[in-house]
Image (cartoon, rainbow, N blue to C red; front, top):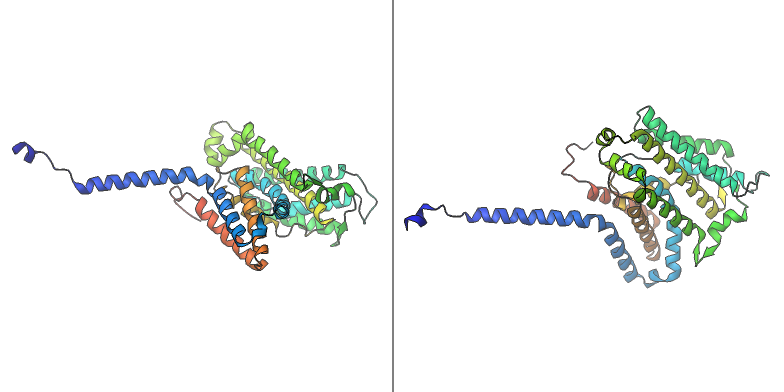
Length: 344
């Protein structure tokens, strides 16, 4: 009796507290493991929902339409992905795309001049867009100006230069080779879809199989630590912005091929869709998380959502509102609030 009385009795409340803390830790661990796959699960759920509401969604011709509508957004979003993984932002999408499309329309066979450089024209245009991206990165790291300010200025410069070159007019693309990207099909899918998948494959190789890919994630995870580790931060940033510019130029080529023309406003509305696709796919705006496969999922979510709303007869204005809600929700889910002490 005395030995039983002398021993401290276990507190039931303490056991409950420990077990609840253990459950909470396990749930947080499970959430972190499943979090990278959340956009893919959302894509599957959205597809099943739209398919249940309209059986035409899963018809092969409709899947081709979805793939075709996702080709240009995928190329543009791939360009923005590495920039966002760095922890930066690139708002020059529409300006660089406009310059690329205008240059392409003027350098291939068209209704405005006698120049006809064939496929050498688009190559020159993409190189020019890569140079603009390189300029973005150089100004950003050289003058230490925030990336969103530099690229915002380049957006307006690009649109302004494109308007000045064409004088506000539109140039029709008459080159059959360029137009074949939109009109010719391989295995039932337009060539533009295969070009976009090729760009995805190249970017995946850069991300996963090269040193610069590892550097990008290291810089996004902590720029100060990356610099102390000997990573050439400034050079990597310039290269990333240059790659983004080249992909925007490729997007300009696909847009000019699809529409059969080039003008200064050809990229209108592309910026919001590009950033939305990257963030919805699970690439965090704070940097260091996500990647090109996340971007593919994000682009498909946007394409499926847009296609589903058309099939269901929903107003296009409501589509824009849904996209706005989607990006707010995606950003809210991607942020790790435990690490955020101050939100500005």
